[in-house]
Image 1: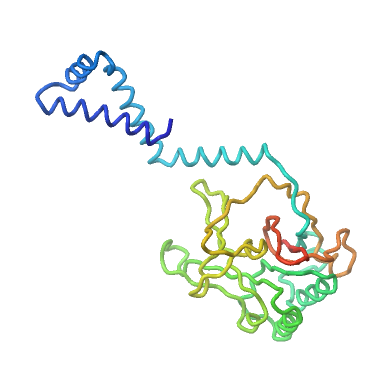
Image 2: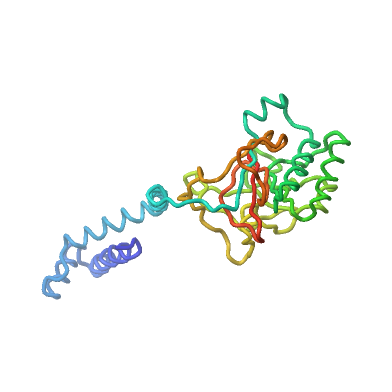
Length: 289
């Protein structure tokens, strides 16, 4: 029985009792009189059970407990129903192995430029970075990345995000953080902001997000090739087996020694990615920090 139906039944009986009291009779006598007139179809115990149920459901609803219970049931479904990932995504990981081999952080942007060239040579269809390129680095390194982006026009996705201007004033003014202006003509811009559910977990991804005064596609929507803003958010399919998605170490791509080649894939340096079908004949690769 739905919460709305329980509420209707409970409050209906409660209001009937109050109506009898307003005419000078007690709620108990009003309920007994109605039960007698209807041949015993309405009982006092049923009234109070309905009222108690309505109050309980209303309390659960107002506290958000029903929504959380529904979300937990959805989580349980994904744990029980598992399916293989698609073959159109590869993750290039900024992993401990790569950090140790290179030996310092942050890496110069000339290194990301070299990665782009290697991925283009391997036939990657698309590259999506989940790395913040909003601040200046050394001029020659910024120039190297800009040149690499220009050699891969329209096939690279760079992230942007909005955040509170004052981290201590939630709900205040928002500011957009974008890649450097010199990079923007060569790339697609994507929003990487996410909105958690009431229990703090992220189960949905928006197809678009606000950025720089405009609405832009989200990173996940761009990788999936589904950026229709009229369709709103979509549920993350946690039933997909993440172990099916190939992962290649960043430095293995640089040296050409990776066990899984990103050939015929699209490449994206990102922190978290879900399997998503890219448009076109080739597939996406993701680089993960």
